[in-house]
Length: 151
Image 1: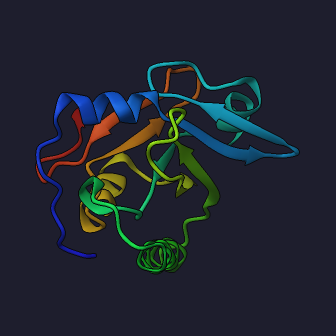
Image 2: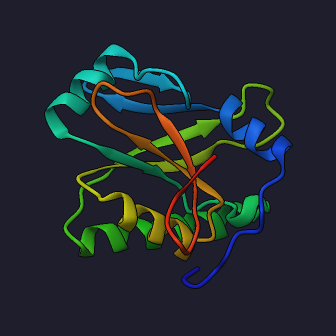
């Protein structure tokens, strides 16, 4: 977990991340969103109230499939780290519409700074993460030690 570094992503991997559907409950609605598109109305309203938020998973570091119990332990470690820093999180998941990749439990974290999100992504071996800002399309960024990079 901490100290893991993802490899350089290939274009097919980034395309798969972009094609994924990201799902989180906001109020009584399940909001589905994708990178490079505006957030759906309930999520956009939530962002307007909560401010910028990050989307991060601890599952399958470096896009290498791990057994579900390993992934759940990693998710729990990420959730505990966020809680220890006083950051709330909403549980959601990322889904492959083609069904070739299993769903990945993820967290939507309001109030986290972009640099902190990047550091956590690196600590948990993630290649990329999402950044959501009020009134802006959802952005996919690459985790990098020098700071987040455009994907």
